[in-house]
Structure formats: C-alpha cells, structure tokens
Image (cartoon, rainbow, N blue to C red; front, side, top):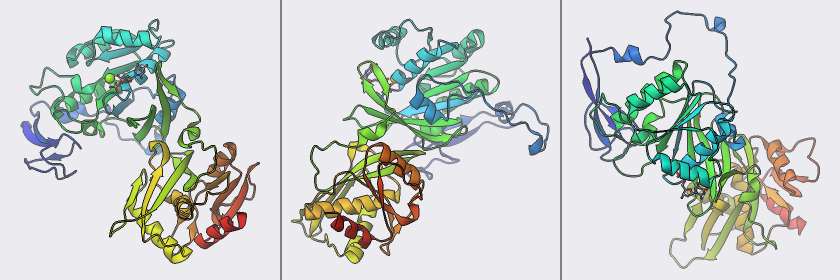
Length: 454
Ligand code: TYD
Ligand code: MG
C-alpha cells in the first residue's frame, strides 16, 4: 500500500519538488513553495485516471469522435474555444481580478440557458450580487440556475442531482474539500478540487468552466497550478487604461492556440468586437511622422496595428531605447541593420517605439514597419497616406517573407489601404482589389521605394 508523501509545489507555476527550497527550481520565483500531501493508502493514481477501460486497441481502430460543439453564445468566445465548448471539456479562464471574467461567463450562460441547462456556482459573490449584476446586464429573465457554495462535496452533489450541461465555477480558488485540512486557495485545495471536478466532467458530466484569478503576490495558488489538468486554458487580459479586453487561448486540446477574441467593456457588459483592426489604428486626420501601419497575426487572425516611433536628440551618454508592446532587443538589431544597410544612423538619438492600444507583437513581421517608422520620425516626414508595411528584416539587410502574407494583404485591402510594402517572396500573383503591391527584397529597396513615391 502506498504511503502518504509530502511534496512541495510552487504557488505560481505549479512545479513540484520533493524537498523545500527557497527558490522554485522551475520558474525561479522566491518563497513560493508550499507543502502539500499526496494521499497514499487508497490507490489515488488509479482512481484519478481518466480512461475507464484498460483494453489495448490499435489506433486505427479507434473511432474519431466528431464533437457536437456547444456554442457559447458569443462569437468571439467561440473563436478562442475553437468553435464552442466540447462536451466533457474542462476550461480554465484565468485573469486579473476585475477584468470581467464573471461578466463574460454570466453573459455566455444567459445565452446558453435558452437551450441548455446551465449552473453558475458562485463562491466569491453572494447570490444577490450575481442577481444584481444580471439585472444591470438586463439578463435577469434568463434561465440560469445559481448556487452560492464553496464546499466541493455539496457542489458535486448538486451537479449529480441537477445534471446541468454546463457549469461555471467562480472561482476555483474559493472552493475547499472536506478531505483536506489546507485553507481554500492553497495549492493542495485548488488542485484537489480541480481534479475532482475534472473527473466528474470526464465521466460524462457537464462542461466545466473554472475561473482562476491570477495572483501577483500572495496566498492564492495561481491558475498555472492547474494548466496541466484542464483541456483548455484561456487568459483574459486587458489594459487597465482602455476598455478593450482580449481572450487568448494558451492551451487547447480542441482547437488552435494563440487565437484571440476581442471584446469591449461597456456599461451593459462585454460587447464583441468583430473588426478589431479598427481598434489598433489611431485615426489621424492628417499624416503624421513616425507612424507606420503593419499587419500582425494573432493566432490565425490578421490584425492591422499602428507602430509609432519617436526619435529625439539624446542628452545622455548612452541614448535611450524604449519599446512598448515590442521586443527591446529587436529594436537594437533593427537600428544596427538600418545603419549598416540603410545608411541611416540613430546613434545620437533617444528612440521610443510603441504599438498602439496596448497590443503586444511577438513576431518579426513588424520589423520593416518599425524601420519605416524610425526613418519617418528621424526625417520628420510622414509616410504616404494609405501605406501598410510588413516583412521580417534579416541581419544582411534582406526583407524576408512572413507567414500568411496573402491573408495580411487581404486584411489591409479590406481596411482600405492603398499600397502594401511587403516582401517579394510574399507577393501573390492575384493581388486583392483596391491595393497595390510594392514588393521588395532589401531594406535599401524599401527606402528607395518610399523616396520615389514622394
Ligand atoms: P467582473 O466580471 O466582476 O470581473 P472579474 O470576475 O474578472 O473579477 O468585472 C468587474 C468590472 O467590470 C468592474 O470593474 C466593473 C466592470 N463592468 C462594466 O464596466 N460594465 C458592466 O456591465 C459590468 C457588469 C461590469
Ligand atoms: Mg468575478
């Protein structure tokens, strides 16, 4: 019989070690390891296993299920889920407190309740508070069932007796199981409750949506502790200063990752933004120097984003290089390429780069646009109206092709851009209507094309 053993798990990343250490060996955070017991005695490993049968089969003989997906009622939410909820799936929705997780799920449940039996388990707010929010969202006549409870065993019993098709647990950090002594929100409670609920979902139970708060510091176990248990991990993010909210899929066993759903928070809850490109472009009434629009990819979705550059004579020994939403090292590299291959020196300039509206660009396809914005600001000369620029820039000064070039071009044409400065290797034979392609192979060529246009 297995003995109970003690392991230490990190509150931030969920990584385990057999011994206590000051620093987590997985994510290098300090003082985040907490002790928790893995029960022995009963064979927990076998109990927790998800596949009920032990028959060995040939892969080819296993019938692939085509899931009957359950639409969430919000198109943008469906997009990140990969087309809706899959029966028996466990979805984790993480995000900072106050970002709008409860609002989103309440709206989704209200839409779902037209056709399905849904249950909202609230551990954070009282039933009255949830009802009050529903009233403000004008959803109070929806058929959502409500349970204000934090004890796992009571929730399990309610799920069995009510048999809903979809359950929201808001939040997993407030639940506790009688079988453990640890406090709610501790690593062991969060993991145990999530594992139990997952088992229920996998045994023909409801779709389970777990809400998890991201915690910067402190006593609650973060959602990362659960990432390996659940099927789908979504993060709800947003810039505190704007009303836009993004849902990003980090892991998805039933769809693509890095998909993005875009919402705007209004006084009547979250509204879908189905044309997010309009968001990330600041509309200038006149052409301005230092601004260049690029098309970036978020998951499979092309997104037009304005890049802004500001160069200013430096009064410091070492000029400043600052980027917002873009990688700092990439900027250093691009400045070197610009100097060596474009003959433009920024050595005595402070350089600031910003991707508008708090968007983060992780791919190199924005390189060429950053270069053009830099030169535009340095020379104090706007790019021609209606230009859109994308392409990766290599150390040899070459403009390399990017993924899904044609889709980016199509998005730009749809938004009314007139000229696309882009890699030659991406130039399609059939150019979308309304846009002209300026295909370049080198940085010098791109600068030359601009000079000729004026
Ligand atoms: P909430 O869904 O409670 O966040 P979470 O569950 O992630 O903690 O959202 C709370 C915030 O959203 C709060 O600051 C107020 C704002 N809000 C609106 O702007 N409009 C609305 O209609 C609602 C319901 C909330
Ligand atoms: Mg909430």
